[in-house]
Length: 252
Image (tube, rainbow, N blue to C red):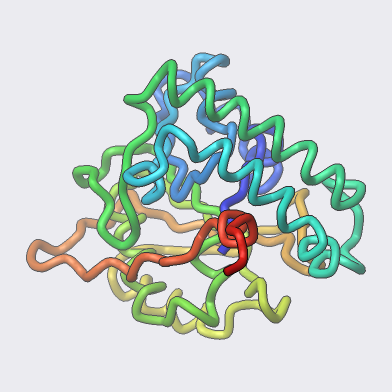
């Protein structure tokens, strides 16, 4: 998995965020946030936003720098994997690296200046009380790695995102990164969520990274109350996230 560093403007496009969504009195969660600059830029605009990511427990002080180095290290891999993508937000691989580098530097400055806005935690066991946020945003995890994480994880993750949301959860994209196809279990999960009192809808958005991924899933959580009892286990940690360090090791 590649930790990304997307911008506030990208978040607005990915999640079709309006001025009302970002207005006074609204509290927003970015999950998982990685090294995105959304919370940093939101803070400068007076928006009440919080980031959560498991990497904040391990690489808190160096995460932005690690993302910058890892993205550069994987330039050739990114170029191969994005060959044929429609240039929409990034003109080419080098432009992606330039933007992610700038965004990760904003992240680095903000996590130092406002550490309370960056909380260590992982799906599907977020460290927040029920209904802590008006709006929860989740990008490039839940369905992006649909071939790796498994349906049990997806179900538990969606329920926990809904648990901490007072109004809505918005998830982008709905396609699996490996295949470029829409996550096959989506409608089944939506039916299960409806049975739990969580409505959902699919909306087109003005953002596309991988061809065909211009949709988000919106969960309506106002009427949902999470059951008490045991919480699901979190997904196992990824033992090798920063492959640029592997590449930099001297050969025996």
